[in-house]
Length: 297
Image 1 (tube, rainbow, N blue to C red):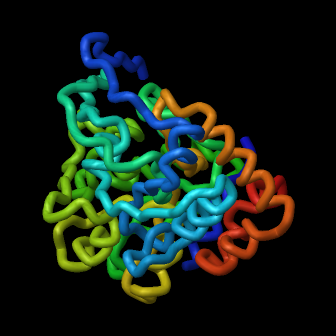
Image 2: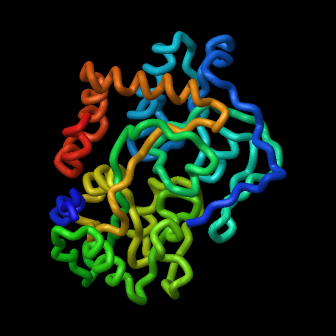
């Protein structure tokens, strides 16, 4: 198997949607252009949406709004509410099932916020082409006796070795996000999982780890880049928990033309160099961790 870029860090199912719950009508491209405004659902997370009115995804969607000739509006949300705010229905998981229920106001037209492409999410949204690469990593405090795995050319083997490090140690996770243990076969196997519930802000995972909420935690690569700088000398990456992942913008199933227009815009800015400038502005150095992704774009 192709060697994963995660090694750079050592130095630093079946889905069912309930038939009775019809999703709210989505606004597609023509309706949004007639309205004159694109509502961007964003979550304060890493450098995708900083909370200060900028970020990788903020600039990306601002450019898209201008491209289709409408005004831009940023609507803040969180990982627990974002799909409900897009679809107008609560999205729940019951084992291998995804169930839509209730009726709520639709607050946005698209999600762009470092949103991981996950199989269960694909059942309820349309994803764009990948906007960014990622991977989930196992992280410990720097004083942990655990050592990073040696790593190999076989990513599946590396993932298995990393998972084995957890053992009886407590693991801090956040359900219903990219750090949900159910996404990576870590739930229901007897692990000491500590769900972080004080907020839905993934930026709080490392401070919680340092404060002793658990012995280990999960982080994805974009967040780890920032945390390894912010908490230099206090945390270490032990190895990969997942295969390489894609992040993308998400749209309601009823908005295929909007999704297609975004894909066309994304291809345009990758071709003219604007996309590369955004990558370097917000995630300088990430290219060496995912050379294949950026070599193709």
